[in-house]
Length: 108
Length: 141
Image 1 (spheres, chains in turn cyan, brown):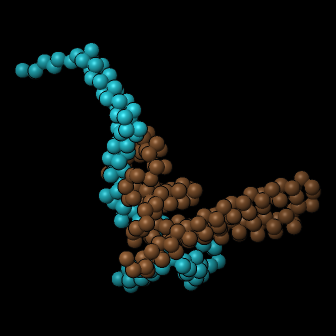
Image 2: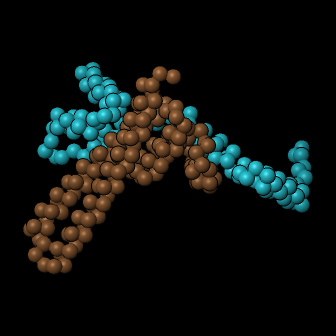
Image 3: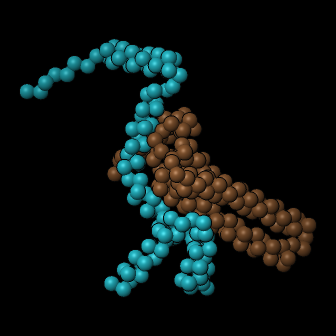
């Protein structure tokens, strides 16, 4: 037997009104948009869990997006990357690791 | 994960602009946004986000890494603009016989120069922040 649902439109509207009033009151008292802020933080959480993976992907993207002349070989590209990563020690180290991983993968 | 990412984007576009600029969202949030802007080559936004992520004195290894990624991309884009300036110069010499064409090439060159200068400014700004973070790491607590 299907259970009958009782939906009350006036009840829903009253709930929404109370919610809005509560949010406005909080905003008035604290000076901050509390609900929006909470939602932003919750939303950001979905992306934050994967931050290390995103940093790795961005490093790979950076290498992939280095413009390569049709006439240049891999040594020119390496030289170009080397020149552009001066004063960027951590990034340079990551590039070296990526290149070594690429060479190892080719050998295997 | 596609659903979660879409939800994240929707929530962010709706609510976050009011809060991002104040700098009190989690540091990882700003790093994530900086990476997203970097993917889209929106360097202005990437610099704004990494600056907000580094507002507190204690800068993490992740912050340093993302900061360096933005600097690297700035340098790549600077080199692209410089190549385009060279190309415009060459074309100006060959085709810039009439006044109209000459003005057009000069305007293009000006646009390229401005873009390059903006990127160089961003690079310097981030290098300063990066060296400050190195100094703070090197200082004994």
